[in-house]
Length: 549
Image (cartoon, rainbow, N blue to C red):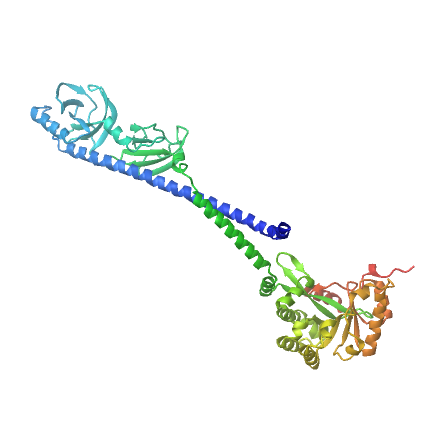
């Protein structure tokens, strides 16, 4: 029994829980995305920092070697005496990475090294006419049978001084910055060719990053068919050389859990909170008081007008003003769906105030033509208990001379409420006529009716619908007519839909009719257009005329 009792509430909560789940999933995706991006940035920064540290370290050492080479004087008559050898050895001793300092004459012959003087000059490349530090390599030194990396300077006489740097020393330095799935390399900035590498060196596909002129981060598929991230950093001392440090993308973002158990708990709490907020917000938005208040602010209540017609000449004598709600989601709503809530929430008076204002604005053209044009407004006990509403009705009486207030029998016979009785007296003294709506369904007797300030009796639709059925309602309609004649009241027949009903009402001498036989309730614009085209006279469609034998 408990589960069945709670089922409606569960069904009401379920949509909000689903929406909250979608929002929570979106938050999770956003959170994970932010985590991944944060880790990417952190790893990018980490790789960039390592590349900058390595390039700075190489710049420092290459700068020291450059300063040493700048201290070497040119060869004298291509000789390499003991004094020169001592100088070269002394300089080499102060620079750990350098294994040899050599002198090359302008003809491209290696004459002297820090080890010895070569009596048979070794032919090498002639020194280029180039100022500053440059590199050559990697190359294989034939007389040493080892690979070497050469830093060189051209001296003022066209000769060259160079320093052989151990490749193993460079490799050991790169090794300190390499990862398991990545690589570190010293490369040619223009071609991308590796000088020294640690790890499996590869290039992006395509290699659009060359030449390297500034610090650069690339995330792409490399020639090894793996998605990698590489940081390039040119050297300051030798811009033609660059350091590149790379790592595989999967290593950067997939090592750790993106959401911890605490994170899942937080997401669960967020889901519960969103479900609760959605449920409460839905209740608030669906609350009748809130909906009616919002509708008043947005001016969503509109007027429809159903003509009241004199059956003899089919002339429009007036209209009954019917309120409709132009709901933004549910469309046009009839009064029965919202008037009871309006009474319960206390908003009906404000709604009627808007209705009167629109009525005067929309019907002003008709009222100016015919001041006696009947305009009936439905009211309830709450209007009669409000002095502000009474005052407003009296004020609109001066603008709408034919204003008639419709009340039901149960409001009229409330003898115990002196305020209601006083309200009727005040209204009738102001010249406002009263109509009893749905007459015949209540308990308003002849003796009591004779004491009420009533002008019109609006016979209930059920009596009109019973015409031709030989039911009791037909006889009640006859009694209403007889009662009205005795009290000199005017009867208005509501719900007239057929010519058979029209003929019977004519026999009963009921002068004023209202119903679909003449016209449905219409927006003001449509009503005014019809009156503009055909005047105040309505014609019953030929298809509805009673067929005769």
